[in-house]
Image (cartoon, rainbow over all chains, first blue to last red; front, side):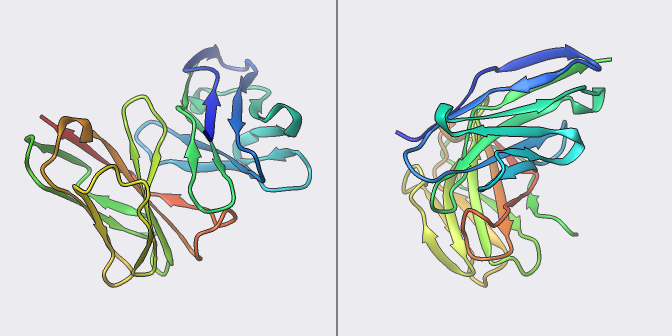
Length: 112
Length: 116
């Protein structure tokens, strides 16, 4: 079955620490990969996306993600987090249609 | 407004009641999606409209769930005879072109449904 797995349910870290959130997917064919973020009290918004080309993609607010096809992974990173990065982060995949398949999400809490 | 809006933001229903959830997509957006997000989970696809046509309803969990978009803009998700397992956040998303992997979906704030 097709699925998206996020490794961590809740991550707590201090400001200026580095962040890496894991995401693995199980799809047999072409995949298009996304990270969405939901800040407290706000709606889901797109952080970054990968369709093809350079496997290292950069998104808004200093986030980046790396697509490693051999590992079926699309991990999200940020070198130095801020308190305002406190949010829930969702990895998502679209295969060859339009249905986003989401992981369960990772709650990130950044302590000042 | 510029974004997707949903109403009501919160809905409490007694088991067995019917509910209707409204989505106003971004003006001019062709595609409209409904997702269901249970507590502690990511959103799951329910149904897809291209203009007024419901092209995919494969994610609707039962025949108690019904969605419509009669004029190709506002959409309503209706749940009949609500059950406790229907408690979730219902998200609406729209995109500017026909559904496909390259068309960004813009999400609304969701409606949190609690069935008692």
